[in-house]
Figure (tube, chains in turn orange, brown, green, cyan):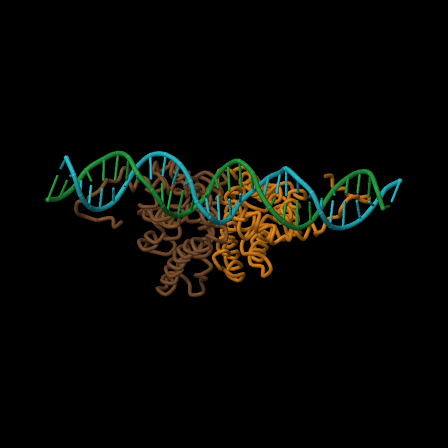
Length: 204
Length: 204
DNA sequence: CTACTTTCATATTGATCGATATGAAAGACG
DNA sequence: CGTCTTTCATATCGATCAATATGAAAGTAG
């Protein structure tokens, strides 16, 4: 049961690439959402039989959450962008442009896995829904703090609505995901990002 | 089979209020989405047995689409707001504020039925998904046309990005739906609406 | 080789999905 | 009343859901 990190393992070896299988699962969840993706679709796409999936990932919920973690593990995570940006404005613009690009990739489904996979679920999936909601709120809180930093440092006026600005950026990103799913291309989303930043308060 | 619009009907009368039952179905679809709402939940909430549902509404898909039509039948539809507004700016503001209020009603689920109920579906529901996508695109096209009207009339500068402005408003509305589902209150959404309008181009 | 451990392939579990078959119940007609 | 039409209540349909029981297969260790 215990997957040894190091050391030789005894017993029959794994016949599939765990990372590759998880990536395929992520693509399916990305496209059809958590409840919209069935185990039979997963086994087909991952090329792994049900018992192996359960042995390797636990159950469907844990597989999904691990796929979400994979989705959020890239170098352009919102948290990363916020941490690396010099100003809140730069952070917001980077988040919007990165989203516009990431939501319209050729090799991936349209939209955002985090924004679309558990928007509407049955009552049975309320806990998974809450988990992703928490991730979204955390990103928003990070951005709000980044804006508040600029206000505290005098780079933005004292009467700036930090929560409103951060909420607006988050809303635009979530909305761009839906527009991408409705067929909007990269240029269109980048144009929306530009409009969204037009109202950003000037530096003091 | 034919539900007579007028004239006396023979046979056993309906034992339930069709409109009231449809409203209850709408609330369920609003909260849990199209595929996340089961027939057994619908029969419970509507207080109607399965054969009666199928006799009165067809099947689950047609019941859902009729619920969507009910949702979009109010006096504050986006199409209505756009048609009645004097300027594109007023239309956009009305849409944003009406959404902020409608997404945070006390007697209704959080968010927007149109924005959330078919964001991620299984492959089997692709047609329903496309139907709602078409409605969203139609609203966006109406708003784009309204902006273009203002440009043509000289009320907005000629270099205004009508598609970008309209797409931004649509994205904010879709995103506000997700934020409302994540717990955002009415004041928060109204603040986001205010920020969203801050970047609107000035009247010429 | 044999013993041991782990994974894999097949078939299947109980539960729930959307949708109905069946016949009784309820009203309008004559 | 009896006849007709429609709806209702019960039970259930085949399909699919997520999740497993079972035993064979594939390696390491001795």
